[in-house]
Image: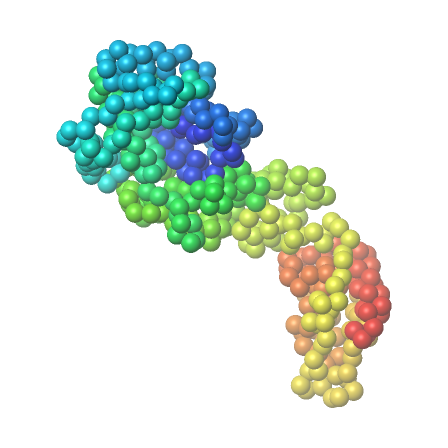
Amino acid sequence: MGMVRVRIAPSPTGSPHIGTAWQALFDFVFAQKNNGKFILRLEDTDRARYVPESEQEIIDTLKWLGFEYDEFYKQSERLDIYKKYAEELKDKGFIFEDEGALRFKTQKEGETSWTDLVGNKTITFPNNTQEDFVVIKSDGFPTYNFANVVDDHLMEITHVIRGNEFISSTPKHLMLYKAFGWIPPQFAHLPVLVGEDRAKLSKRHGAKGALEFKKEGYLKEALLNFLALLGWSHPEGKEVFTIKEMISVFDFKDFNPSSAFFDVTKLEWINGEYIRNISNEELEKRLDEFLVDHPAKGKLGPIIPLVKERIKKLSDFVPLTDFFFEKVEYEKEVFDKLLPRRHPEADSAEGSHNLESILKRVIKEMEGMGKNWKADIFEQTFRKLADELGISVTAMFQLIRVAISGQLVTPPLYESVKILGEEETIKRVQEALSFVKSSGKLA
């Protein structure tokens, strides 16, 4: 067989969706497994649908995922090559002219077969199911079917790995190989990627590109791990593994030919696992790269341990921690949920405190603590105050949480207070008091 050579051959007709990254993963892994070559070929001959910026997006996607390609080609720069080989087939009687285009005359007798690497199954098509097809369009550009075969031969591609939507095109390709007298590559047709509605995942279906997942805060290692599990199974049954581990065990026999379900919930779970397993220093580095023009850049160190177990994506960091860096915006609806209920053991007088009076007492206690804001003393102080005022401890600490952050959910309260500092904490509780006073019935 010689050196393994595989290619990813996307069409730059728009932002590449996640299926392109999925296919590229298996091309890259198979090449690495066999010390082979990974080639990028842009199939840009459909000029009506060509989108120039899509080329760079494809390149950026491969670069972000770590798929370094060994060779790069653009079909639009190879038009003379396709014309030359079309003329060769014309001279052999396999091609005829049809309204300015060149069309291949398919063989109608017999059948065309190949053994597919996915499922190790023989696929057969009766030749009479194949219509004559265009190889060179009237505009001089080759069709996908023709340029694909010519390029795969000239680039010495040994294995063609692609989606199984191309199974129906393979008989045409094999007829072209036979007409030229060339040995065809081996074919591996991957299962169909389907979305939540079990419809095929595609750009028209709303499938996102890999770079969109990057913007949403997914780690590339987690995304690749997730993509690997779409249709392929680790032989040891592992759910979480590195690309290096995948390369060491990869085999086409571990594919399931049935449809692969793109489960975003599972992707989030895997991403959360990766976030928890990297060091705090590495997570800080990833967040610094992710948080473009965010005031948190360079100030993340103390906050990382508070959120690491709570986030599934890098983007989750922002709503959870914005209050550390930005002015708190209070909402009446949030305070409505905090109207304290009377403690069952308190008398009616002690249990009638409203938010305004409670916040005043909180400020008084905080100011009286001086510099003695240790965790145990902080907790004891406000447990005692909750008991004195006849409200639950949970309600007391939730009120303080909302007063310093404007949110019902934050990182651990005491650790958040320590990061804000005593002075800033008191200032925020005073601002919360002012908001409550101005909100009428809340007070």
